[in-house]
View 1 (tube, rainbow, N blue to C red):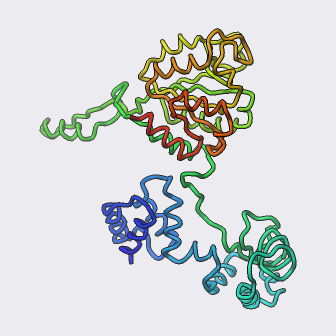
View 2: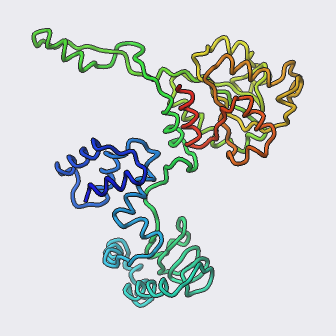
View 3: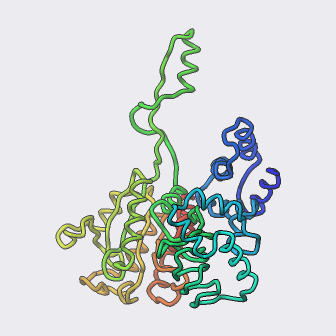
Length: 391
């Protein structure tokens, strides 16, 4: 059976290997888990899935193979009444059990649900009989009945459903889901290059064993510097104006980047990069740094990431004096070309959904100036950007 499970995961597009499958079999042989589907789920995911972005694919494949999650979603199979009854007996209070009895008992509740699933055609909204939304039927979503079975609703409203039938336990972590700090960290980890740097304070186990053996068995401890990510990142962040709509996700990206990259320097700009940048938005008028000085201080070994929506008048990019805040002597186009010549590894991350880019003239212009190295602020977009920077 588990060989078929392994093949089902491969068919679902998961990069699982025979070595990982053998690890799962060994864990089962040693009795790491026994008699629990939930325990087996977590063991299988731990041994077979190497990257968090594949968690959702694994959940769907696992559910489809073991006839649970996907079958429940479309309600085309027989309801596992025995399981539901046992769950109800275990979790419901005496008061809640009494509410179930008000409809004629658990058997009556489930029998009525089955009949209505067979009779009903299509979606229904409102009312008190059919399975749908915004009604008082014991089955459905976004309505009210004190002893109902909730089907097709995200989250609880009245907290009175006897059974939440289609609730998924595992959070979606696929490539195009909504961003969060955790998802961003996973994507940023594509940009890693480890080296041992600093003081020798980490135990070198292999070196210690060899040195002890060469020392006639007398312990000879060897230390090595800590293994660190040596990638250097220079982050330029657009702030203010239209970027106010993206503050939350930008803060999450900034927080994740500070965690993932030990060598991270950041600066702010508004709309487009000109001759000056700043570190503190509260003192942006009085404490700016020359863009030339930043380029001289942080060499071409830095990876440059620009974060902004690139939404402005094209005049701000193409013309001297085009900035909305000051009279810039040279155009933004000149400065972006200088940055790209100085930093061969550079990308632009844009919080605007990619399908809207073609409707913003300045955004399309910026994308061309960036030599097509613009990516959406999604897990998949970040992953592609990090792969490009890692080359």
